[in-house]
Image (cartoon, rainbow, N blue to C red):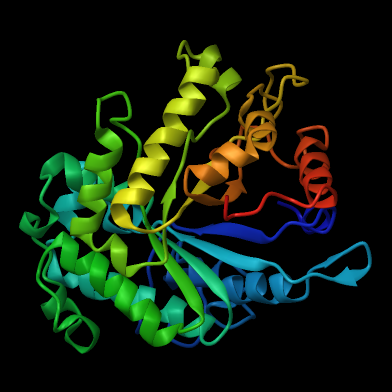
Length: 339
């Protein structure tokens, strides 16, 4: 969201994506230039040192205000780098890419760089949406999916097995080491939500990955507004049954992993929109705020709203709905996490 929107309601957290490319430690160690490609560490003005893009969120979150009073927010970083950095095809290609020691060396170096920039600051870390589900598609046993983590990063990963599970566990361990005040979680995808028992099955897969070493598990109900999906012939609407199914699935994941979940990238549309670009209809924002007690009972401890694609409804184009709902919830005292 824009800075003005972030200050318009008592938001607790603010997130951004880090994607597009990983660091060339030699060329981009101390300064930014065209040689750094699409690396997130140089998304800021190149006159600033590498990593300032992430530091800017830390600074904005720490200095956040609401109604003229200080109200720090938690900065959340969604680390989504395997797909675009590996130049692999989405899906199986990404899973194959983590078996390349040279790529994995650069990847884990970039992850370390982010963690070192966070340092002792408070933050939340969200590791690789979608990717772990692609691992599961390849093999439901993540210990059997090869990834030479001990070779790629012997300093931090030498004690971890050379597998997708070893990669996930090492990334969490690196967060503990380099960013000790940050919390961290892997991402669980609901792609098989229609299958009986998939919440527990997804949770069991996440446990095998090492999600229990984290602080929470991220989930996402949709990457685009339902009205947008209707325009391309897909039904992604939530009715009461679909919403209840998602909450039940989330609870099963949380109960199996033994960690709470956070819903991320929740579409921002509402029924006052007219189903044009940046003004698509959806009902998830309104549904969730109207059912917060049910949300909490499902093991969900946070709701992170955001457009998953540039044509979708945003906090600036939703007619003020998210700001109004958030403010009203805060004024009403919120909903206790312990029910």
